[in-house]
Amino acid sequence: MDRLHFFTPVRILPGQGQAVEEVDSVAEAMVFLRKWPSGRRGPVYQCALNCCSAAMAGNMSAEEARKAFTGFARITRLLDDDMAMPIGGEAMDNVYALRR
Image 1 (cartoon, rainbow, N blue to C red):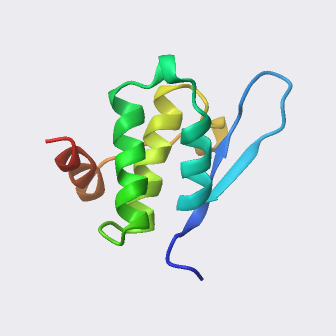
Image 2: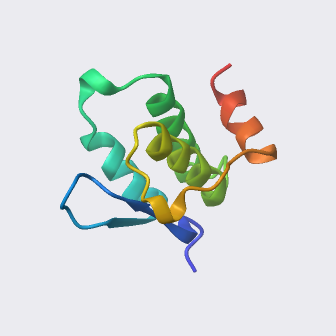
Image 3: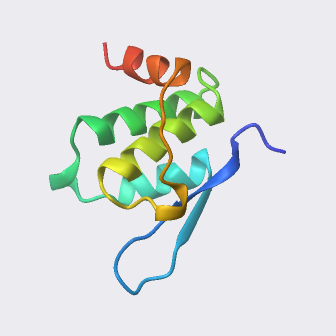
């Protein structure tokens, strides 16, 4: 497995009646984030983008970036209901440390 692939894909539900999209790597998460409307790019978006960039540079694991991307998807209400589980712990501490 490539070091930038997620162990479990993040399932995104873009909108009512649209197919679920599976994001299964840091690179795919970056593509998704870059397409995000500039007017909706707040601190949670920036945190997810920073974590994915850090993972691409080898400064963070893919799973830590996945957790940040999952948090972004949850906050923006794009996370598929099947994935709705609590996040937190040490990995999220790393996510917030990047914002400091």
